[in-house]
Length: 109
Image 1 (cartoon, one colour):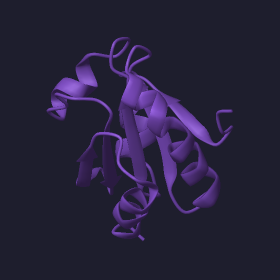
Image 2 (cartoon, one colour):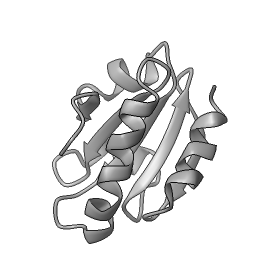
Image 3 (tube, rainbow, N blue to C red):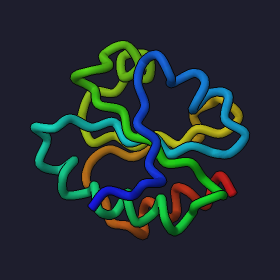
């Protein structure tokens, strides 16, 4: 069950929703055919609920929005990139454990 706190991102909304966001943003670059993306999805949904109001969590489908992943050198998915003040703070690639994503988020808080 997807969290209603997840922001669905696109190439068109990326600048407004992520780069100009007042709060840190964790972006999940994913695709519908990607098994590890599906595996990590419940973890990302849980983080959206856990950090609601502190960190914005967004998902960007790389097949539907090819420009943004290219700009950030996304080669493998899932890639999760943490943005703060419009800049990349850190990133992880692959279906990593929840505690690794929490450590990533804490860098921005």
